[in-house]
Length: 461
Image (cartoon, rainbow, N blue to C red):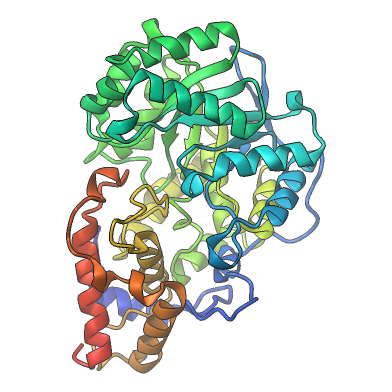
């Protein structure tokens, strides 16, 4: 966590600066009510265009790809964590009807249910197979999946679940986690990458690339071998908040993007909102953004920023709710590219303002899940970050809003995270750490949150 101001100053500031939009209370959502994130985004208003989507051309295939890509990770659910396929089908059809034609999934998403859900939704949409592009991944993360046979099985199962006989964009999933060792184990030493290249030649994979998180040395190695593997595209994390990151080039959008641009490799962008954190900013950051364009959503700034980069093929967004989808379609129908002044304002003043607050760098990607002890790690962090942004993390009992903030945090915590899945059940096994793309010391943060919760409950803060 980066703290350019101390916690007391932050809490004082976030409690006294008014927003230009009304924000929902942290975690205080009743059954059947809309998710509070929707209010936080401060949506565009007006009709959603059906024929003005911005497209980018894949230089290799000529694919006309919508600059808004649908990330099939954060899907709507029913009671008991069951996917709401009826709502998912509606979202998919709406996206296609409004010009979105790139859908990104993985065998690892939604506890293994994402690909089958997407296959069903695309088939139900009534659109022809040549009217959309499917991206999925070779997600052979566990040692039990490192063999050639297991890797091939994962790919064949993807085709079956997606109800297709070819994949438009196939990625080696999450290169960089753990450095070079996993690359050799997962793709090189077992001959799997050679086989995938053969599948590309056969047309079962139209574009072959990789997604990157972690050790920049692994990223550099993959690109240094571009002449051999001829990467058709690469998926990177990039946003205005981390565009300049000299401390960690593996998280520097500028470095990752420029390395692709100079080789002529199209960039697919993930986490343009940092897992939603750039749409759920503190009140006075909302006011800061609204001063420039009061009619635009908070999220639109992040999408316009990254979409203005010419080598970006598509920008992925995990759109759980129709309001998210509508807002993003408006932003990119058509894209109003940022001016040079606006880009500098976001990269500099705005990014520093956001970085100054003590949130946890969790993107809610769920790569740390499932926890062997049943904790809802992303849910805990998301709740904590929401409460930081709304000023509901009191410094002490002397804080002016202590009673309100205490109730909002504790009641919201119980509502958003079941008691048996809360931070106090962490045994510090550290199994989650290697899986976190943001390199968060998850057990340490869980212990810190648990101690804070106990202080609130006991009245000892």
